[in-house]
Length: 605
Image 1 (cartoon, helix red, strand yellow):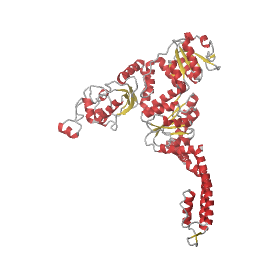
Image 2 (image 1 turned 135 degrees about the horizontal axis):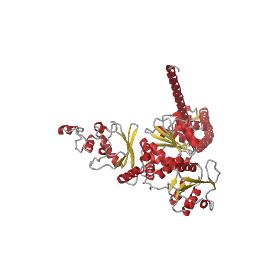
Image 3 (image 1 turned 180 degrees about the horizontal axis):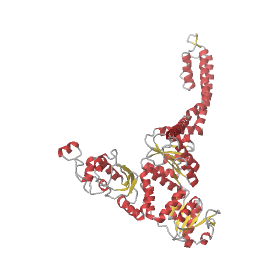
Image 4 (image 1 turned 45 degrees about the vertical axis):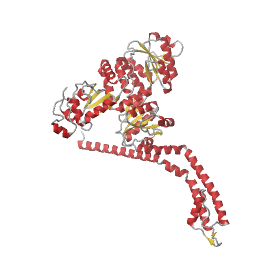
């Protein structure tokens, strides 16, 4: 057994050394990002150095010649031109302004020298202007200029923002969802067309974007990784290696910033988790889990997909996947593996069809599935479910059409790989559709919008399908079939100053808090989804739930209900009326005159 004191100091020194290394790495990254932002100046100086030297040399020689060649006054006496006059003459001569000959008419020698200077300056200007136009068309100069402009826009951000690496379909959906929540976004992407398309998107706030490779830590620094307002980093590129690079850079340079990354394989997910504790999203794994949830609890799956879609999303239909019978999975790639494993975990028989022989699956049929007679030979008429899960949209559409025509009552699911194929898949009216980009965007939104929503979605399936169905009915009755605003509320003296005494009374019931300030007999159009107290969470609490100081609430409802609830949280007289039914004067003077205090009477239920 070692000395405890030595062990303590050894660990302390190791922690300090790690902190010094992290600070040194952040300083190097900051210096590199600053260097990239100032590349424009050095590029201009390097490219325009020769033209500027030529212009300066021509101008200097011309001025020197005018000072050395004597002129003549009106009486013919020689008069040398002063240095200032020579500069003045060459200034308006070289710029083609041409004021005249000063201070006296030029002699033939002076006119000859000025003529030579004119042609020399024309050549110099042509050379300089040509070099400048060439510089403006240079790709590296435009990129450096874009980096400098982008870095200034990011540096001016004074509110929390999310750094998104990869602005494909998933990044676009996430950007719009965050924009509807009033959250700022900064974007990196290697595709210049996607960045240029930001100006055409209907964002409420300005979205800074840069065409750059997210694998470069310097680009991440320019995009605000070291900015104090960077609240999260999201890696949504189509390259798993690039996403891993973003996770590594964030973990090493800003370990306190949460990072969410997309990974399409379990191996890559494990490599990412080696750097801290990032949230890794595998869309194929998530779809398999969702399909398993849809098999066990259709209402829970309906509620989950609705809340993940964000404000304004319509209520999705409640499907009914078959829980018994045999399923046919065409394509044993990333999706096929996850689905086969999840379906068999539910006790469902699965037949795999794939053109490549597979050693890791039993009884696989080696075929493409679209050959004549293959599906019929597998007993498609007797199957309960069918999945077209290849990485080719045309193949998936063909497989789904063949399965639907052979068995009209068959449950058909398919995978959509390209956004341009969305109208075709929508026309097919499939029972289940996997769009990996949308799955990733919804998962990231659920984690970033508020941690309480992620906690609710994680704990919700354990409550049962009947409970989820009742909550869906409650939401639709109160808020309609389109998802309304989601917001978080903390019952603290800073965010709810009018509730402090009421919460301490031990009789603060949730139903009283959600009464209308206009008429307390009416309830606000808001539904509490979760109350978090310490580490414990209560899902969809009842109106008689007793609130306590420090509770965190997740609510969904109309924006007008949120504004009305804000008045209850901050105005003492409104809180008194809502919780007790008494009309209390808002002015301190009138309360003293009338002898009425806010918290003297207990709340009536």
